[in-house]
Length: 433
Ligand code: URA
Image: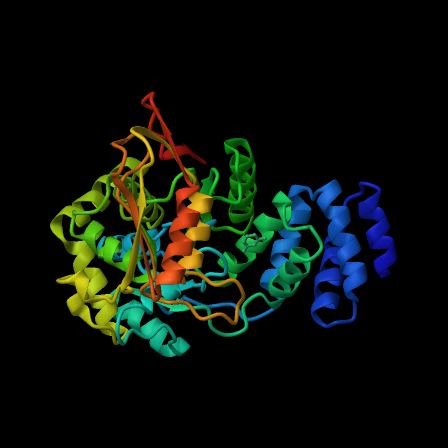
């Protein structure tokens, strides 16, 4: 097989055969295909696209390129959850325990964040003593005994995606729906769960800025799930403003506990109930999606979700007292407020600007090698649609030093638009596919 022929066929709008896709992925991982040919093919794909069969074959080739997790030793329908990434999105910390409390085994590997804020693993590590690395046997044992384990990605999962994503990042070829969908789904399929709930974010703080693009991406991922024999639901949800009030690692864990205690902000609480409901439905514990959301809410109200989070923290060596007193988590000492410059209604809190500000505060990484400050971040005091008076505090920034806090607050200020007219609150869940 010849890589040049493959590039030319895709450049001219042809479809690649399964064997050609496998030849490309395997050859690239083995370093038999050089970056310049892989880049040329990625650019051809970027312009010509992939059909459903090609997308599935690419996903499968990447899934098979490394280790895959075998969860068959854990009884029950294992359900995974994935968010395409948003600012203030701490839902995994909430929906995992709720679904597990309702009898759905959750064996989840999460990433560290690169970009605005930390990932789930960074957030969990702000809990004193908590381990996010477990050997496969211990991981499986914990899921069997506790019903849930949340750990960092271990082993050698989808090396092809890692290599291709890094190449896409520097060749202007990230933003292709089939490439994004196959990248995400290859990792989800390798992680071994039987069913998957996808939270596809849309809006200013998300990868997909429009609902139409989010829908297209969601549909491709749902199709991949179906073709791979994994029941998959995608929700398209709002990311025009941050989710919840807290952005940052310890701050987000505190907020997740508040939600599990029934005292959290409305938007993150509602979204968590819906996602957990979908997991409970796919996990076969109820007959309808609506019943799943009802059961999830019951687990929140009864405290069963919080007790499951406590069990998870204890099993992974963390201090379970955070569930009783979230303020024991250290928040960075330097505080700088963002003040309203005029009176009116909050029309916009640009999630992307808040994300950049939280990175300036120390809560996110600019490069993989950067360390993050678990106590840094931003607490929002108002959301879109709220009325404020000139001089009110819109948000507080926490950082390890005054200079950083001031810079982050100056950045956060850019996120706000205040208007005389009361705006509509954004619809949180836009579509379910
Ligand atoms: N996230 C991924 O994992 N892959 C992509 O291609 C884009 C976002």
